[in-house]
Length: 267
Image 1 (cartoon, rainbow, N blue to C red):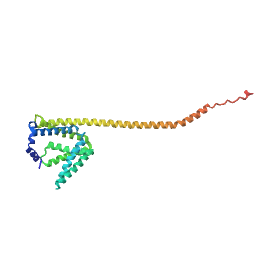
Image 2 (image 1 turned 90 degrees about the vertical axis):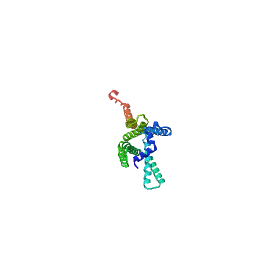
Image 3 (image 1 turned 180 degrees about the horizontal axis):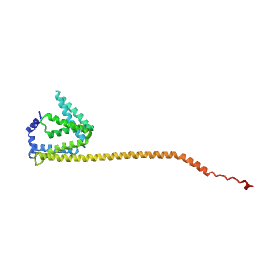
Image 4 (image 1 turned 90 degrees about the horizontal axis):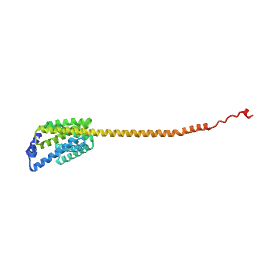
């Protein structure tokens, strides 16, 4: 089963047609579609504007989804029972969710890999699993660069990923239809999201540098105080000997020299 088969299955349900003009629908279908689109807009905007700031949350969610999918699929491919497959998927989902949330670099790697692969799928719209694997490989290559440029890559990826989700949902709610409208909305959101995240990260780095400089100044101040205290102690230790010497000199000065008596005068 390929992507087009899944798309045909979606079309059979009628939701694909309804999504082309959700505002024209009526009743429960309209409510469900609008609620889904609203959720997509909110989630997409959070990704777009707070991608790096909420990186641990995204890592936990994506790690959980990826872990369950890999564990469940691998267990089924090995011919294991469905209950065992569910258990395997749940265990791996829990492990990846915890690792992604707790270990920063693991979370960054997971987010970069999954979002990079998803963006490739969104752009190329692959029709078979070979192209899907190519998108996954491209996402893996991007994720490897997070070892050196973690923050910048996450900002760009989450900005584009969130803009694609929110922009697509917003475009469906607009009265104007067309691929160019959707691309324009996505592009504007991506630029705004990346710019906002870069400004936030710049401010965070500036604050971090100021705190570091303040800490260094405090350490230097403490070191200077210690040196002054040592100098004072050394001065106090040196004063008694100096006082003794000066006292001896003073005594010598105070000692009067008796004038010699002139014998002739006595006579």
